[in-house]
Image 1 (spheres, helix red, strand yellow):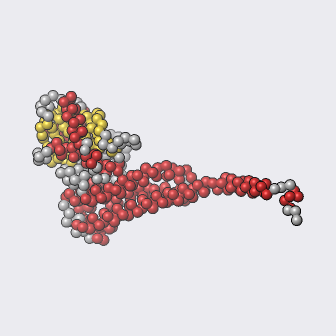
Image 2: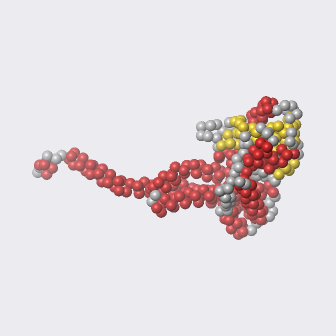
Image 3: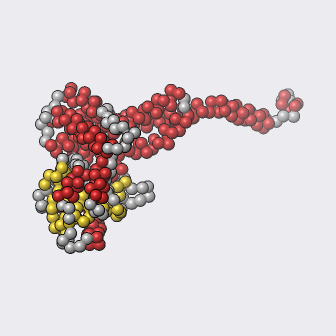
Length: 371
């Protein structure tokens, strides 16, 4: 029998081509009608995986925090409930419509929140000493950061899913790698804060401690100390946070007081860790002009104001590192740059001051693990 297709002059290859064309047309139509929904579906699946990773990091950190707090005599039930309150606590920025005095309002709110924060931790750990409580406070701050990142990503994920908003999904996908990098850095920091080990941000206090040597420091502001030492024929006023507990102290207030106490000071030098850009090497030392200090800006405002009112030049030396390196255990390649920073500082005071001059040196950063 002769095949039916042969009578019409159509070959099997033609039939296959017709079928493939039909499939492509149908696929194009489906993509045209439902392409956005399909893209949203697969994008949300990928984001959902990251959200689950964030949730696990948050929960693991919370569990670790509760375990650490319960070691110091607190009631387990109270610790669990208070931990939830601490992790979700907030600070509301002052009104900025009239900028006059906003720095001092912000400073007041920060101090009020710190008092609230420390009193909560102290109440939960009646058998802990001051250093332990400071380190536990740092661990709480890590938990707060992870909790906020999780809630923020969950909000964007739920909003995009609820409204099938492709633009919101794309925005979330674009910012997610940075968010996950920050979350991984915070999660990795839990070990260092639990053990009270120096972190990357401890570079400034570590260098200040080396300059202080065996000279006993004096308290100059809350959780902030200074020593008066002789270095390269100059009188140094060396400032750092009071260690070895995890605190950054109040360097702005300390420098204000010291410049009032020593009006003969002719130079202010601040040393701090700084976030490196992608492609830059960790541990790179950079010099500049100004006050090297992060945070909300209150301390930098105080330092700049005190130095400017007395026409004292300000110089800065920073050690570059990644966000993860800044809040995790201090690496040997970063620690090895202490001598390089001191070499730069020595050259700076030779160039900018005369013998017997008074120089204020501030090692900015978290002094955890640094006495």
